[in-house]
Image (cartoon, rainbow, N blue to C red):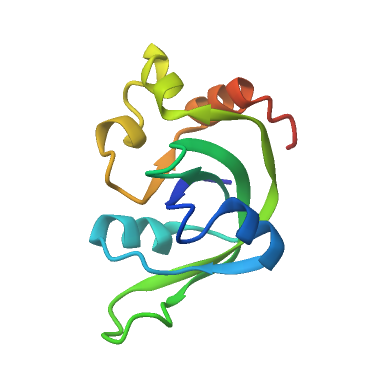
Length: 138
């Protein structure tokens, strides 16, 4: 299983909306690198759900429920989306400030490529971020 981080502005699509909607397509990605990450996702992969702009924190964990398919919000046919479902909230949200203050996380995409909306997270970084947020579920 691979691990990821997906970002959403909470005033556009929040963690609460993800929970209420169940399975939801992760649409609107319009960056080639982020889209390639979506294409690499497999059913069962887990991702941190990160609130960007407002909050700037990991607030939950989602699981990929459907692999990449054409994004229905894209009229060009170039972009893809995946379906994700909420697994659970992060017991203690992990803020960007905390992430940046943790030397072991200096190389993650959230720090190095802060504008990228979908990024891989190494197993080592996944375990550390889960520990920081009190996430104990498999």
